[in-house]
View 1 (tube, one colour):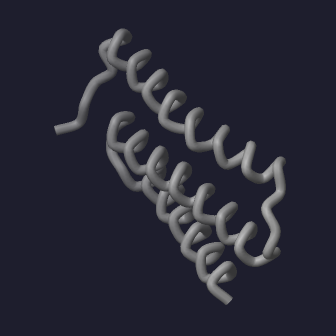
View 2: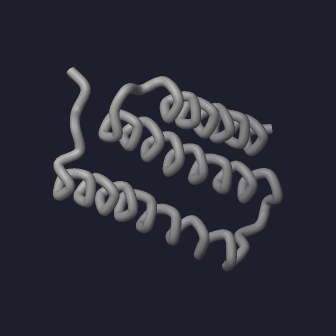
View 3: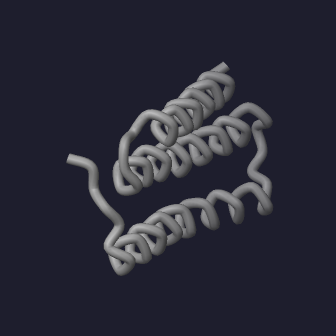
Length: 91
């Protein structure tokens, strides 16, 4: 039951991150909303699947590690590229 709860919370974070992409005015705000929602939501969803199935799968653990490290790196790279291009920030 706790695995399904974690999956539900993960999906909720993914949906909230998607709404942040649509709602926020500028690139930096959108990156913050999407980055937190994507990383946290995907991690919670995968942990929920691991708890629900009851066994640790090597591929799932590798995917967790990959998401944990690549999500913030990609978000930072996009923000740095926008900063170099002098992307306008909404007041």
